Image (cartoon, rainbow, N blue to C red; front, side):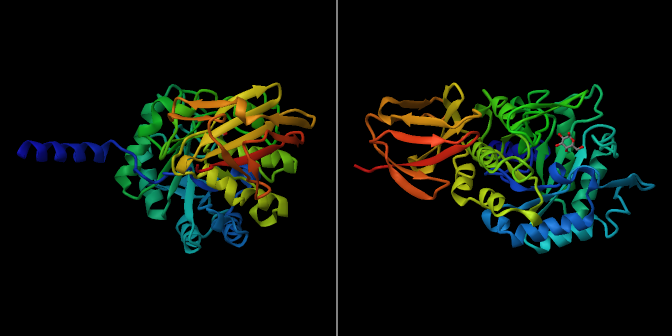
Length: 402
Ligand code: GLA
């Protein structure tokens, strides 16, 4: 008995110092981040407006929670080394801003970097991790995105672990979002360190292509999708692959935005909007708040979808859901519309990772169209459709009880 108690005590004392805050991201985090649209032009008015618009637009009701200020909020450190917000753009200070966000029933996120400076050249957290974590906790920060610029020869795992320990020590529960672009395969070690980790470099507002910035590249939605190959086995509740924040509403076509959003839901990706929430078109709003698509992303099983088939530019993805259901997404990557005739009965889907399988010749499923919001028959007949260029048909399969 005494030995058992000793072991339990040992377990808790070890885990107190060696774990992230468990259970903060049992489903992929949903929110908004300033970077994709605003970049370095961020200020407290922009953040307050985003919080207001999150509520007024119905995004909060759809499940979005976090308002995250990305790079460029920083001023200098004070004489004791504590980081301060830029007094020109954040004159009311971070605590007041966090209070404003919290008062709307939302959560407050901030950004820093494991190196000497952030990617935009602001003070990084290197050497100040415990002080920064303490400051964030005093401000009321609930989410930290932690970048990887200016890190020299730092060891990624150690650097991110130091910040995890610092957050833990500061005591306020914080979702820890690792942003080292997949350079050091965080999916192999970050499960114990953070709640989500970027798997790639930065996304661009482009569906299919690469933007060359000289010393670095940013990636189209399809390029990022392809870079997720093989990573699904590393994700699950409280530890997610992050294919980057969304570009929905930032300039792609409605079809491309819909395809981007659908694929992020199929990937069980964190859903961080990156557009101007106060100036959304009805189409953008409809995409970002589609409850049926969001339910696929937020499914409690937390199983990332799998690419079942790729036929030229047509891909068919499956994602196991709770209650034996599945999501299916037909993605047309081509520049032309594409005819689909998918005869379910000749397909068998096996997912060794989740242990789930479907043999469509032996079982029947009702089909619900998640963008048209209606039932469209069963798997007895082939699914036929013309999918416009860069668009999707996203479906939910519900078992027909015999
Ligand atoms: C890196 C990150 C981006 C963004 C910028 C800010 O590029 O990957 O998501 O945070 O830095 O400078």
